[in-house]
Image 1 (cartoon, rainbow, N blue to C red):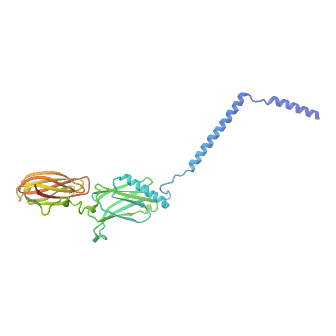
Image 2: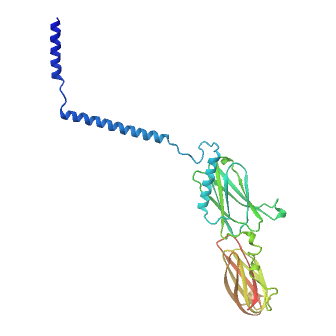
Image 3: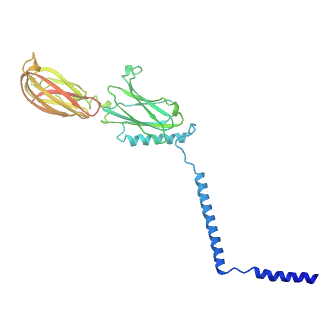
Length: 332
């Protein structure tokens, strides 16, 4: 029995050697290529998986909370800076006044009055809407009660704010205030900024002397012998006249105009004081450039022989702000 078992093991070893052949050269190459392909594919999977994990792990910081929750002070300050950059880019001229802040409650500032047409822009970064109310301040006697509304402007808050714009003329005011109102939807979730420019850049505080058109004529006191009459007044876009007044002599017309447009003057002479419109015998026209501050210009009129004279004008300007001017007939 033991010999039979030993013979069986001997036969098994011979058969195994015959069936298990060593791999040839081509088979070895195929095996290596399969292993390299498997390794490279696994590497690509790992890289792709790593990139996916990295991208999923990245989170962009929103400019405004998607849930409407209040922002921390640092986030609000960033929104206020974004709003300021927006109005600076949208209204880049020299600023008359420019302010801003975070929408955290009632807010008001006093600003100075400027001449000309004011270009006013408001931007809000974040969520919600805000409104600015521009109100005038009258003289010291009625400052508490005389608070006319000059402008009201509303801006929609967003991550990419677009400035809202309006324009106005301040007129005869001692000052103005800019107040933040209607802000509940943006409370603790937005920042705002406003910026004002004008077509003159001139403060109204300088109007008493430097901006006074009569002062700009630099007239002697008393007037030279042979002087005629003078006229001072405002000029909005449109026509106006001084009425008919007698004049006799050889004249030049001194003119000073404060504004941004052109004052077109016409000197008309009439024969009959009873019906001057029907008896006009001569007229001469002039174009006077208005400016801030006003400067005197002398216009040659010539001889007027004891006739009724009318000074008519038309003011032309792209600005909504009116002009004012002063004139004086002086001997030539």
